[in-house]
Each structure stands twice: as C-alpha cells, then as structure tokens.
Image 1 (cartoon, one colour):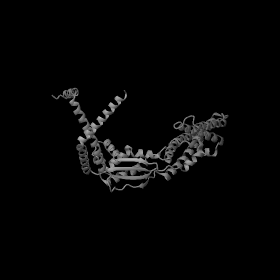
Image 2 (cartoon, rainbow, N blue to C red; image 1 turned 90 degrees about the vertical axis):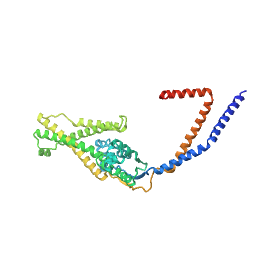
Image 3 (cartoon, one colour; image 1 turned 60 degrees about the horizontal axis):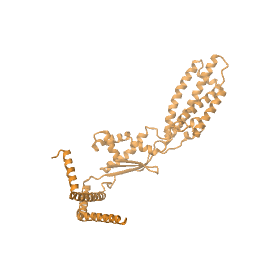
Image 4 (cartoon, rainbow, N blue to C red; image 1 turned 90 degrees about the horizontal axis):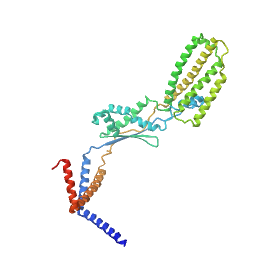
Length: 388
C-alpha cells in the first residue's frame, strides 16, 4: 500500500524533469545564440576599454639591528629596560606598509604627480581613495615588501611605484621607527630632563657657599655613593613604570624588577644615616647629595644617548631596492578572453532562468485561479504607480 504514493512521486518527478528538458529543447536556439552573441559583444567592448598597465617594485625595509648601545644595556640593570618599551615592534614590515598607506605619503604623491586632475577627482579624499584603489602594497613571508600600481600610462605607473619608496624614505627620516631611533629619542628626552635638574642642583649647591673648585677638592665619596644608589632607584622605578605597559604583574620579569627595586631601596636605607653635624653642614650634605644624584643620572643618560646616536647613524633608515619598477611592456587588464567567458556564462544562466520563469508564467495563466491572481497583482501594481 505504501508503494503506490512512492510510485506516484517518482512519476511526477520524471514528468517535471521531462518538462524542463522540453522547455530547454524548445528554446535551444535562444540558449545557444543568446549567450554567444552577448559574449562576442563583451569581447568587442573589451577592445574599446583603455588598457591598464601595472608596474611593480620590491624592496627590503630597514633591518632591526642590535648595536653597541643595545648590548651595553645589560650592564646597566635599571636602565636596561628603559628603551625596551619604546622599541619592540612585533612586525616592522606591517608598520612600513601602514606608513605607505598613510595620508602623509598619499598626499605627497598626489601633490607630486597632480593626481587630482589625473583621476578627475573633486576632493583630496576622493583622490586618496582612487590612489588606494590603483595601488596594492603587501608584505611577504620572505621579509620583502611589494608595491604594485595601475595606470593607463606605463611610465606613470612606474614613476608612482618608485615614488612610494622615495616618499617612505623621506618619511622615515622624520620618524623614530628603528630600535636605535627609539632609544635615541627616549634618552634624548631623559637627558634634557636630567640636565635641567642637574643645573638647578648645582645652583642650589653654589647657594650654600660652595663653588665648583670646592666640589672637585671635596669628593665626599660616601655621599656620592648614596646619590648613585638613589639614581639607580629612580631609574629602576622608571623601568617598572614602562614595564606595566606591556607586562602583567605576575610576569617573571616584572617580579624580578620589583625585587631589584626592593634590594636597591634596602641598600639605600642602610647607607643613609641622619646627619650628626650642624644645620649648615646638613644643608651642604643634602645639596651635595642632590647634585651627585642628578650628575649620575646625567652621565648615565648621556652615555646611552651617544651610543644610540652612533647606532642610529650606522643603522639608518636604509631601504634596499630589490627590483626597481620599470614601465611595463604588456597591459595587465582588461583580460579580453576572461571578460568574454564570464559574459557568456553569466548571460547563459540569466537566459535559462528567464526561459523557466516565462514557462512557469504561461502555465500559471492557463489556470483560472492563477490567472485571476496575476490580474489582481497587475492591477495593484498599476494602482500603486498611478497607471490607469
């Protein structure tokens, strides 16, 4: 008994499939000649489209190096991590790609090649959008950066591609990107601060009746040692403050830095003793200790600043060109064969869909109920558009 509905469904499916094949057979000429004609038309139109040329350049970005200053940081425990927070780029290539896509570089290229008129744009924003659409900048796993630029003029495509590298080189000269540049900028700021503080401490010491020659004849080694420990405590506190930006408090390095700070404070507490002399001597000792403290900081920062400058001069923002862009000899698009094939397939599918819909509508019009619904739908559509 259950086999009869199954047989009826199979017969219905067979009838529907035969109906579809019959529809295709009846419209076979349209389904063949239509897509073929549209494909040939698309092929003809592709010959009218102006050709586009793509220029390409490949370069090696500045390499991160560990110079003499970076190696000496290990011998300055407290100062060793000061420049670590300033440096530490995860993927420098991604940063260079972002720099070339920045508005600064884009505006420089727009002004250099008058791209506002070339792209027929109304605003600077539209010009940057058009430039970004015609440019492709990517970083490969081999550490090289590739730049591709499309233009209708092969020479212009090559010029804009090479100009990307030139503008990046000029931009890097204004920024601190490499590890040495980061250290140089960091220690330069610290050096200026310590220099001002040292000047104020020296003036305060002179106000106590002690001149510079007296300072040199009376080293006060004990006080100088306390000042050095105090300077190391300050440097360690700066290091811990910078580590909070990229480490958690449970990190082993962070805990070690806290342990070193506690040890320095304990050593400072043992060395520091309340003054047993007169108020004048105590005032002199306090001012002299401040002077030696800021003098120690100034010497540490000055040494690191000079080493960073040496590393920066040796490293530099050196961009090494692997393949320089030249005017391309062959166009990159339009791809005439691909356009013709896609147009043929897309039109064939559209015509097939049209044939099936037309056949379904004809069958629906033969049924009275469906014909009445189609009439109501048509009248409603005309009424909404105001058509009588």
